[in-house]
Figure (tube, rainbow, N blue to C red):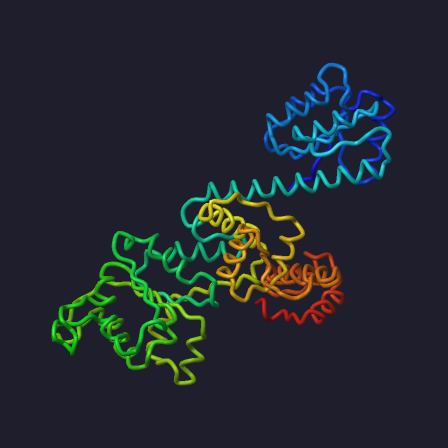
Length: 440
């Protein structure tokens, strides 16, 4: 976000020069004017500015400037300067939408303090607007799989590259990272989107009925089979079968699934006829299937059959820069569901959200957004508020992690990006338990 500019309107040259100098010494960018008319012409709905205006001016008054500014952008902060002890007018002006007012004479510290608060508010307003505009104008896969980090951009590109291929896909990701959303994108952005997308959670179906659910059965195939049932695999013909939590698939079912993948046909229970299939299988796991295979918990032949196109979804802690965009998206969704206004997240609270580890990943962040819209705490951490040192440390660690990730674990490149001596960076990496090889 560009630096917020202060537009100062004061007809008294001495007061104008003194106020301008005080603001510049406080590190504000200032443009000063002796009348309000040219200022009104500069404004537009997303002007990165804050107005400081005397009320009594030649021509257009400060109150008229306030009215004109609010007509252009109702949220634009306007600070009015009053003299002659006219407090009643200033109070009415705040009721009409002024951000604050100062009574002459005021000190440099008073002026800098109120302008700092106004610029912080304006910066936050514009950041929220930019996020919401991005969400509103997102199209295609970017509207479904949100995130601006390099990892998410690369993931979207790979999905679009392989979506039209017939090969099966294996998706890895921690709980809550969005494995099913990735699977739906693979289906939606392929020719198979004209046919069924069939999701099946392998860990949620009792083993006693799993075979019937997956393969279907003929009437009378077993006790209770009163009529023919089409299984999930057959229902996904010409479409996509998504097998979530495939690591929990019983070993006996793994053998039968392997046969389906190899022969591209399915046989209902109680039938001797193999039905040919045109099907794409997408499997997802939160566990390393190679490790499971080595431990005898997952068939190695099925693992190698699935291990052709492999997608890895990064956990939320590895793409913290995406948290503001995701949180804003989830708040807008929650506000619509609960029929409540969508709140603005204070900058300090957003920094706190970005500093959390989010073990439940995007799913946990969505729940936090729901709570925030309902007026509850968004934080999932029940501990006492972090000290300033802890917050600074968490932010510093996040910046180092981002630099190492962007540099592919190259410490020298990360040092350049952070403007740090190599010895200092190594010391901080040791302090936070970070290893360069984890980012290669």
